Length: 417
Image (spheres, rainbow, N blue to C red):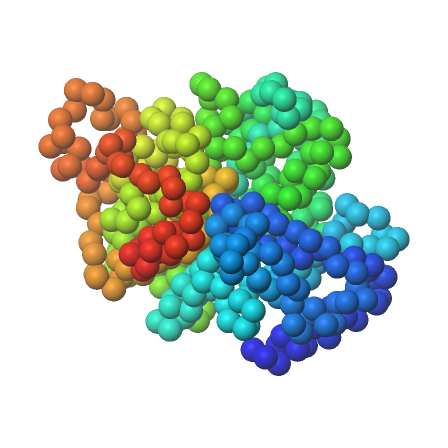
């Protein structure tokens, strides 16, 4: 690992010189997932790659108190990337940072470190955790209201500014080394989606933050406002971040069993059961805003019950069947997260909950293969809901303050994993 980092540092210094980079933006997130950034001149880059850059942690949401505020942002050289929308003359690049205490120890409240810690737990069991999130978002004509940019629907081919913005977003992401699989119009007016190719969770969390910045920057360049708010307008679908995920051991998909009716291994079923059992507590992280719960209502393709199924998009956990029986394609999809969450913490709690299910050998209930929101009208009894493997989430007493303090968030993560 040290040799890999040293090689990456040398490559960064070489590229900075070759590409005539003058400024480096150092990125990290606060506890809520807001992107934080400060800029250094490349004359200081070599020293900062070795020792990091000091900053006031008490001014960052969820980090430190004022009496212990000194912190260090240490760039990860493997994340170096030149920003394509900035001028090529005196170019600007960026790197994601790990947050350290003054003595060099990792800061426990750094969302990136929280994910790294849980990924190490998975690695100790021989697993690599892969994720492929689908982030939906809206374009509005400006930031003052919710006037739609287009009137398209799902998969509509619109010949307008929104379509051009999505195309430019894809081109920018690919120029930054982020592989894009598909892009399309979503269900609601002016709602869009660009899907990145799945990869390991830490790399993907970095990519999610970059993706959100690119979507917003591309829209802003044309005077348009892009938002990842879960439910910006009443009466239409909200924006989700459906997370496809799998565990691999080496080159083999640990979720796959060709003899199972759903092609799911027993380990995958334990993982599903862990997600279902811990759904109430991890929802405070995957859906952290009051607005998040305006999306999680029946009738808008968002889960309102704790259930699982295969082709059923009303379920909380879904097993996609695009390519049944194909090992590499076997995965589960967790559908409640929204794109306004912190991806480092969201991936972390999902992994932790799934690993807990594996450790405890939990078993999921029978899958539900009907539209949950239509099947379970008010006339349905609580017994029917329980027998169908569903548990209503509306009465949960979620403590929204958990998202404002890393200590409470860490407690929830530990409880889940």
